[in-house]
Amino acid sequence: MNARSQSVLTPFEGMGTVSKLSLPDQVYASLREELMSGRFAPGQRVPLRAIATAMGTSTMPVREAVNRLVATGALELLPNRRVSVPTLSEDRYRDLTKAKVLIESAAAEASVPFLTNEILERLRSLHVQMCEVASLPHNVANVQEYLKLNKDFHFTIYSISDSSALMNVIESLWLQVGPYFNLLHSETTGWRGNDRHKEILRALVARDPLWVRVSVRADLKGAADYILDNGLLSQQLVG
Image (cartoon, rainbow, N blue to C red):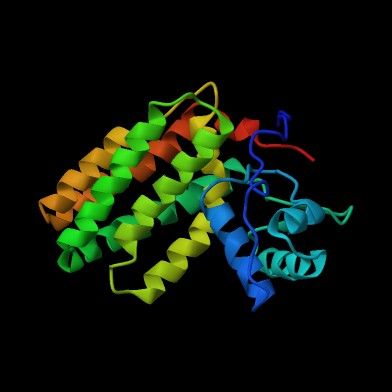
């Protein structure tokens, strides 16, 4: 596995401070969001002090939040006591993405009866914002913004499926696979995937459940296949 510079993404910079009320829970929620949005790279070290400084808190609530994420497998504790984002074998990545495709396409299909004009307008706005970001220079800040918009686009759809059980599973999968999204938008791959978002939006506007399922499946499978077919798993960080 080839080593890659650990400066690809620095999610702990600009994370913003948190309220002192329920501090560990807020730090935990913030780190979960960063992981699901793909702002941490696979194998990237998670420096507790840097995160605490960025969030305006001590290391204690950060350590508590990190320990919770380690317990769920979203982060891993290395033998040297450092914490990092787990790297996945090809078999594990295939297994997770297979589950991701099946469950998220089902959640998207289930969301159709609950669509409102307000939700469709939000999805249109998110798609427009993604297109705008994709027209900008390809740098870390723009990649981070694109990944956040991508997560918001998908979760806006899934969250109206009226199934908390599905959402819990989807969030668990994104915690593990989310860090791999930034491999799709590296300096060598450029921007990817927005045409498929346009197709998903068209299917939602038509309120066609089967079309929605198929278009979401194509989006997710296309991203996973690109990572596998182009050997991007070898770009996971080491150490």
